[in-house]
Image (cartoon, rainbow, N blue to C red; front, side, top):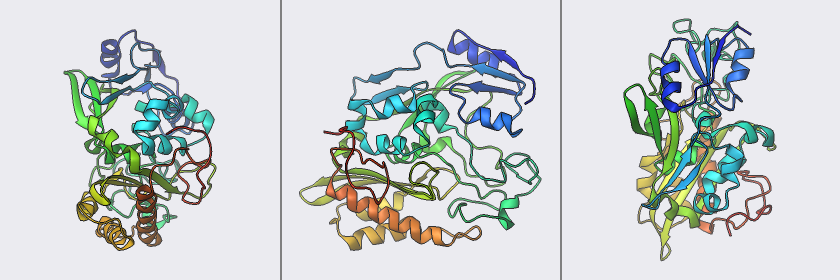
Length: 352
């Protein structure tokens, strides 16, 4: 591992000032960054350790009915917070389906939003990767690419975004609070992650020194809690990144879907909001035909980036399954195998 300088700031403003220098990276839980450093994928000159910054590890209920989650809240603590899981069950289920229990105990909310792709070519310094080294090419295009993107990809990069957590958050219009050199600003989570285009090395909208300090869910997001599910198809049900995943959040009145919030994971370089599919479900009856139509619309622009044509139909099927389960109602207990489409509803009481 490359030698680096280490700095532990006492305040957010100190952290932002220190991280504005080129070659600097923030360190919190370190569950992704340290792996990248050990593998020679990331080689920062300086680490700014923000893990002890005061005030960023709180879950706050806002006066307008929304929720503010500090960037240093641990994934496990958030998923097991009773009020959070009851109000945003699909988000809690997504968190519990990600990584292992040990990693969830260490990983932070802010770090989860910014985790890097798990593309094998990105992790291999001997491979060409435009994301890691711009202009070198993308070995994934002609390589092992069955798990790569079918939406939003470009010739420069076909990698997918790995987060489970972000998928239901994007569906629920989450907002990210950022502290930077010019002060504090907000950005929709949907706009935080960038599509690769011709600049795949630019993965998000952050500027040098920018620090995510909080994540906010609007008051209306909890209005979907009675009919909300997150489902994930993976190669190991115990823990693995999604081949495809889907978040379905519905507001149902008198047997009719009044509003739907849908998003897909594992299919694109960013969490993918399926807005056109949402529109097809507005004021519709919750029927299998309506769900199939929504799934077709959600994947209408999908195209294989390699040996992954199967992901398009698989994503459609998992969205239909998520919608079917969401209509049935959010279970009172999180499944023992969270987010598995094959799991029976059992396990720790969390949403009662």
